[in-house]
Length: 172
Image (cartoon, rainbow, N blue to C red):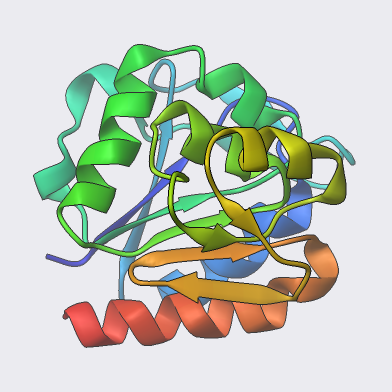
């Protein structure tokens, strides 16, 4: 199993998609961009990245993937409204595969009810949301709690991606 899921929609944080995507690809995994529909052109919030979804959330299963990456930006707020996106996130987490969420992607962790009882971090503005979802919020560049990997912002991408790659390597 060499596929890694990237779930996203418009207004994703450009670098929070690009850096892990390129690292996953360079390591020999197949990154798969999953959107609300297949073939949809997505624009990054900074206008640096344009990505076309590979597949619709309707056409995937957790068993297809070795791990999951959720880029931040406004995208997580859009995709957490889709019950299949939420279910995929929870299923990959429950299968003990790496789930990596950065910045505002913590919203999806709360929606999938996988933040409860976990130590994690995020962009500071959603700290209270995550605490209210039962998480222990900490302010550090990367937090690894079992198969859950979280980071705060683009400045944390090196540590975030290194931790993701380490967990993918252990899972392989």
